[in-house]
Image (cartoon, rainbow, N blue to C red; front, side):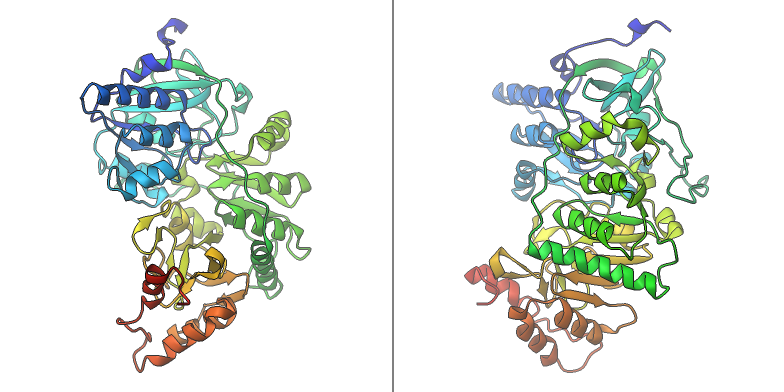
Length: 493
């Protein structure tokens, strides 16, 4: 097939294909592998259309969050009509909380099948990043998969950014597999973290590709803060808890794969696990491979990593690309429908470790909303793993805003994960193992082991003041901590 079939164009020319009211699917899972140049051009087009008095907004679907060149630029241009399934951009967050952009939260494993089922309507266009495109339509993705494979297949047309930051030698890093839909779905034949069941490349009919835009923008992955004392203590508590479970035969010999969220606490947890002499080298089956995992791979503490995104800082990515043969033997990137699939989480016995904004004394977790109403980021994949994990762990510091907020409260102001899915709670204060405990026993364990001393008396008084009932909850005072903060700026009064 003649290479001229794939037309080269500028980002501005590509943006002309996007029309008001379109639903556009973008590559990206975190800023890794996200389209960049074309979204920026779409934002400029939106600004021009608005200046001319014309409407211009689109529906935006991605794998998860993206970089500022996508979510931020489109939000600042007021170009987003609705957005799913997850975001982490401050400008988009402001737009959502102000009611300017509609947002619906979604478990990340559910997005691809909901797209296929038609629950989100027609996808007019997919805009993706690649490091290589052949004349025959073989496409090598870059640092993430996310929902890209599904978006490309169901979209009417495709635009591709070929990004020179990423080498074509990434071919072989990805394992692209899409399950059939009911009633024809079969088991997903992955029985270890290392199993590969799909293809290395996307295959797109060349006639479906509207054009190629060349780009040289790096992934917009920022660094993480150095761990503070509380974060380091949380990491140590997690590692010590898991070493104890291994020693007592709860975790099988050889250990089990780990899923960990993204951020400072996750980095501290993984670092503590790698530094614990009682924890053997372990595998990751997670959404994201981040800096700490790469360090642990180089040290031999992580033997393999399966994820949907390689979310690492620029220096770490340069190190990976400089030693690509080493890392390609130790990691694989899959679609988020596979990396987060409940069937695989349960089969492989994943130990899940996720963070909370707040949790209550009975083990319910809020991971998405501040004071019950303002969206932070979204549920992401935490529910995919938590509800199906071998052991589900939630971590958070016991206090926030210099002690003005207790992250342990009588009742969460928004619930994402119920007590039925949360088995272990860990703060810098200690560990509350909730397995086999009734509500009163859970409350006692969480307050005694995880709450900050400044809040223990108030929390204890709360659940002891309620007489009778299986769960000692007072509808009249359950949100007294939150109300006090809203009125005075401090939960302590």
